[in-house]
Image (cartoon, rainbow, N blue to C red; front, side, top):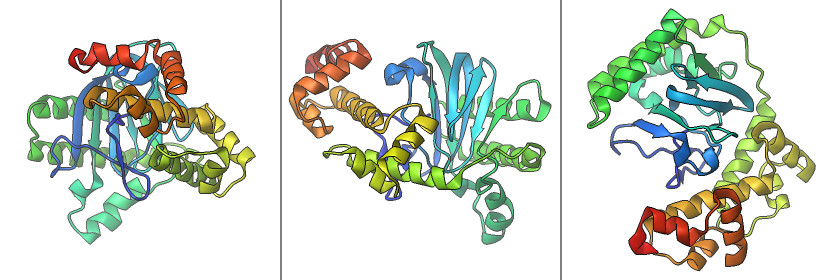
Length: 297
C-alpha cells in the first residue's frame, strides 16, 4: 500500500521501497486513503513483508486478485512478492498504519534463511492473512504493529523493530499451515507481474497494448483478461492511471510546466492529459498544484 508517486522500481520491476532510514530496511508510517488519487493505490509488489492495521474506517485490499474487506481494528499481512493494493470504490476515508519489513532484517545466516525464512516468504500458498483481533495470536501481531509505530514514529529504533519482527514472524510461521491453501495461478501471476513492471518502467514512452502483452509473453486477449481478472481494469486504463499518479508527484515536487509534465509522464499531448486528470480528480493540474503549493502555480 506504500506505493507513492515517488516509487522507484528495481531491475526486476519490484518496488524499491523508500524506507524511513535508507540504511535500515523498515518502512513505518501512518497514512490515509484519501492521499491516494481516486482513493486507490497502484498495484505493486516488493520483497518486503507488508502489514496494514486499520485505525479508523474501512477499505478493500486486493492481493493477487483476491478482494479482502478490512474494518477498524483489523489488519492484513501480505507475503513477499505478492502484488497488492488498497482502495475504496466509494471514496470512504480510511486511516491506517502501513509497515514494511525486509526479510534481510532476519537473514542472519544461511541456516536461518533456508530453514525459517524461505518456508514462509516462498510459500506460494500463503499470499496473505487477514488479521482478526478476536483471534489471540493474530491480535498479538496487531498489538506489535501498534507498538512498532508508536516507538518508531519519530526515529527508527532498530532493536525494537528486530524484536517485534522476530515475534511476528514466529507467529506467522507457526500458524501458516493451519489455513487452507490459497489458489495461485503461478503462470498468470508471473505474466501479469512482468506486464505491470513493463508499464511502470516504460510509462514515459509510447506504449501500445501489443507492447504490454509482449512483456507478459501472451496475446492481447490474454493480456486484457489478466488485467481485468486481477486488477479489475484494462491494460490501457492501468497505464493511464499510473501516468496520472506520476504526474501528481511532479506537480507536487517540481516547477515543471503542465505541458512538460504531460510529456514526461508519457501523454501524447497536454489536452489529453488535462482531460484525464479532470476526469479522475475533478480538478485541473494547475488548480491541483495551487492547492498543494500556491507559489508553484
